[in-house]
Length: 138
Image 1: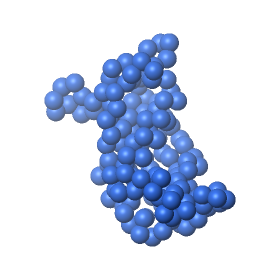
Image 2: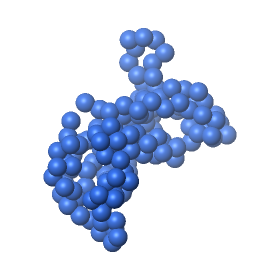
Image 3: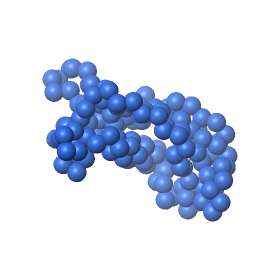
Image 4: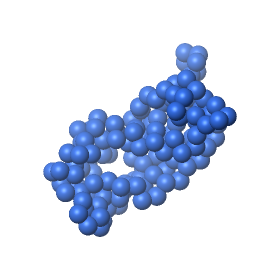
């Protein structure tokens, strides 16, 4: 089951054409991943301070399907898709909240994001603690 985070499109999110600037989807996805971790009881600063390691994006593949516009209400979803010893992969979507009750949301953008677990000091990969991995699973 995917975690969802609501986002409203503001003026600052749009380009001269009145649609969401493509790079801002990365910001929306980042915020949703941060809130997903927080909902699981793991603040980014807390992980860094207590475990001496942090998550960093190592790969991002995005696909843009339809534009979002000023004042649109979006849902940004995050779901764990897989993991290795030192990274996780999440699937994310930006969905246009439906205007009609019961109507399915429209997928605007989708991404596969790989996030490495690295040592705070050296930025070298580290093994993700097994207890943390267990908590990330749905």
